[in-house]
Each structure stands twice: as structure tokens, then as C-alpha cells.
Image (cartoon, rainbow, N blue to C red):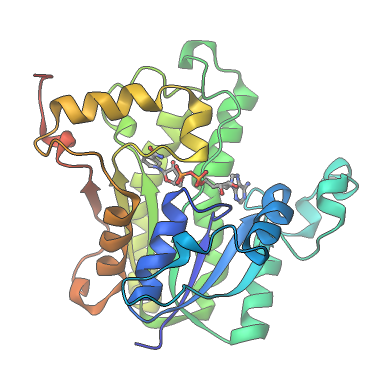
Length: 286
Ligand code: NAI
């Protein structure tokens, strides 16, 4: 009760970040979100105009409140790292303090501390290309936006996190099994994210008593997933082959995140938790 969460990677009401925010809000947490700078305007406008009101409804009938929306680009650690063309880009020029370090400083100034950090973002510019056709830049961009972004967020938010706090990211089974179509180095980025989850669990656990886990989620028709282009096939495949033959709802991932963030999970850290209707356990399609 009375916990505060910062959720990076919310820009509409379709993705896992939004569902996690809702589950945490339903459990009594105060919600802060970090929204990718180019998506900020439309997200804030839609929020203000009530476009998300229906999806803001919590189980008790009240509406989820987002206390503050912070512009964020998790590819940049601090102002020195921002190239000139981004600084002057008109989608960025209207906002300020959106590098990871600056966002952490702003949250510290505004609220002092947080209890829960969620990383629900990924980006791979060449995701639709097979790995053999992926450029070095595309590969490194996928790792920068989808893996290092988490190292950087945790590093900068750790000093704000109360001991006993919890940090969660989202990963995908393509890190450990072959999923053709999840290209551009995104499979590599998720493998890095999962390995980092273990190392960061050790470092943040020893240093600050913070738990670090990642949820390996099944397929969801989010904005990011639609951009990859094979999401409907993945959902059908899961429906046909998973032990539980139902469509995965984002809320089920949200609820698992709320569990992991709670004292009920006080001995769970460094783990990859599957929330995928059990698909990961299958050895063959049936
Ligand atoms: P989403 O589109 O709701 O979330 C991705 C968010 O990342 C967007 O809000 C986007 O604006 C933001 N973003 C991209 N680059 C950014 C940057 N440089 N700085 C800050 N924000 C940035 O889509 P989804 O699918 O809910 O993704 C959330 C997480 O779930 C990702 O890590 C994704 O890989 C993971 N996931 C998704 C699955 C799916 O089927 N949708 C399956 C397994 C994992």
C-alpha cells in the first residue's frame, strides 16, 4: 500500500505497460509513466480528451489516475549523449529533460523516491529483417533501445528506490528459441536483457536490496507488435499449441507484474517468469 511506481514505455492503452500500470494502480500504487518523446503529444492529448477512460476503469469501478507523465527517450543517458539533429528535431524540441538521467532527477525532485521500476519498451529498426540481413547499426540500435535502456534506467533510478523495492522488464521467448520473423537483433536484445536480469539482480540486490525480474510474455496485439508484422500468426500459433488454449490478455501480464512487485514475491529475484499460457513448455507443435 502507498507504493509508487515508474513505468517506462506507456504511449497508449494497448500495450503491456498500460496493463501493468492498471494492475499496480488496482493494488494501490501511485502511477508515474515515462512516454517516448515522439509519442508524448498524442498520448497526453488522448488522455486529456478521455479517449482512454474506458480502459482506465479498475476492478473497483474507479478510474486509474496517472499522477505524472514524463517525456523519455531511453536511448539517451544524458544531455551530452544527444546528437544535434535530435536536439533540433521538432518532435523533441518541444519537450525537455527527457534523457534517462534527467527523468530520474525530475522524479527525485517531484516525489523523492519510488518503490517499483518497470521497463516496458523495445525498439528494433530492422526487426522485420532476418539476422543474416541485419546491419551493424540496426543490431546495435536494437540492443541500445531494448537492452541497455534497462541497464541505464535501473542505474539512474536505483538511488531513488527504497530497499525492498522491485524492478521488472518484459522479454520474449525468441531470446532462447528460434522465432523466425523476430529479427533485426531483437532476439539478441532479449537474450541480453535476460542475462542482464541475473547480473543486475545480484548487483542491485547486494547494493540496495532491490529485486530484479523479467516477464517472458506471450504474444499481444500491441502497437509495437503490430509493427513487427507477424503478431496474428503468433497469437494463432499459441492458441493452437499452448497448454492453455485462450488468447493472452495484457491484464494477465499486469497481474503477474503486480505479484512480482509485491512482498508476496520477496524471495524471487534474477528470474525469467513465463506468462504465456504455458507455450514455453511445449517441445513440439500439436
Ligand atoms: P508497446 O508499443 O505498448 O510498448 C513499447 C513502448 O516502447 C512504446 O510505448 C514506445 O513508444 C516505447 N519506446 C520505444 N522506443 C523508446 C525509447 N527509445 N524510449 C522510450 N520509450 C520507447 O508494445 P508492447 O508489445 O506492450 O511492448 C512492451 C514490452 O513488452 C517490450 O519490451 C516488448 O518487447 C515486450 N513484449 C511484447 C510482446 C508482444 O507480443 N506484444 C511479447 C513479449 C514481450
